[in-house]
Image (cartoon, rainbow, N blue to C red; front, side, top):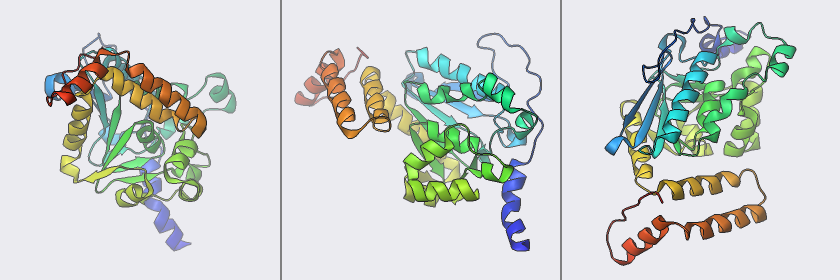
Length: 290
């Protein structure tokens, strides 16, 4: 028992109840946020960079933070200069889970009637590609948030887990669903039922993470990836993202049909014509997002 308590202690410390979000101060559009840092970076401001910024609580995902994240995502979604988005946290934690103190006193009626966590999936519905740059803890809701992104880059010390079982509950923002699709039934079941964490290296081997970088260069590499994505046609990129995501929702036959329709649709765009013409003429394509 002593050995078991020692094993669980780090997870419990990372997920112990924390003070909820302080009262939010009103702010004018463009004046900034309290729980995130949002800015444009990359060539020509082509990359939207969002940094979760509650370091004292290991970026615990309170309602105010998710609300601000959604506002930043909405702004980047409609910004014609932005072609891709990077979501990151701090070096110690991407996000160590949902804010437990905010949830502690909720009842079934509160959750069901108020569609609790219903606004968390905005990230998964953004049409522009999103790269998660995960350093440190990505636990519970933090792991779920990362999995809503399209690409996950991890720092070499990153750790992933769905430890809700240790709190007497289960994942509620896609953890049992997206994790299973990413790593397969056996590992997903082990992580969900034990609450155990896996390293960045294990996450890459399982298919949850695509690449691993040193902690200090992770965000830079994620921005570089996003910048490369943003240099392509935004309308074609959106079609490609839609087609890949469909693979998790449809049968192979249905998915292939959708892919073919989207492929045909690219022939109605000026960017498809420009891309193929540039290839034949052996020059770089000049996409106009049309």
